[in-house]
Length: 384
Image 1: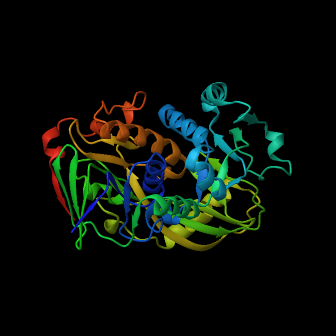
Image 2: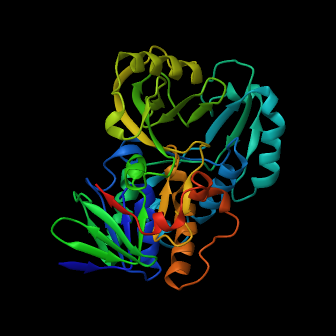
């Protein structure tokens, strides 16, 4: 039995759901497929989404700015708006990063998205968390938000349900690329025929696109009960510690001792080391945390590229496989921008036009597999 859709999107996490919903709103017939429940696995299933702009990588900061500018437009105005809570964020950097912070403020600070440096005495006031008195420069983004990732995924998937097809708990048996605009996806009980397949399966993307250069990395996420009253997220770049408030006294933080492997199944599970590390990290970003108590440590994970940048684009010149992965745990803030870029390229492909997206070529998957033959990727058959 055959099912026909123009585009199939594999992976109903925040990235895949955003691309599928945006395609549906553009009038493209879309099937969104996930091996589990939508938004229940990997980074989308466990993370407390944080939307902020500054990044030490200029390209990632540009992508974040682009994405933030699109969050109030189109399908994201309804799906993201209900999942965001504006809190602001404090980013604490080493003093030698002061010039970089000034450049970011000059380039991206605006009335719509203000950015400014905080003085030391401002951090001692009641408006901001009581940060430890360390040698730092402090960037304040008052319009930064904490988001409920699973809530956003659910809203995006509801949009897909209304206009396309959402298949959950469905394993992909194989992907057979028969021509530059014909893909057969074996679902077991049926075969989905489409013109393009988007692989947005997070840490499982390497399994579907073996030569992508991606790897799975664990992101152990601890939820910690503290005595301090957290009003906003705090990130300390020097110690690589952060706290994202989930309630007034419960924060989420990322643990150290991370693992890497080809698939999520190869990653080590959190243990007592991660609980100890979580308490230490919370204390590093909030002096009033008191004696932190770890409630649980979630085994989060995501896909990473060698250079830490997302992979976004067709796998080869004539390939019908489009890769949207390598988000490194930042997919929530990138999703609207990634979806806009992807939809532009995908619609050009469907129209038989040049598929390149000006300005974002540095994200192309080709940067990690320049010697891989285009014809092999275009006509590959991948077995699950």
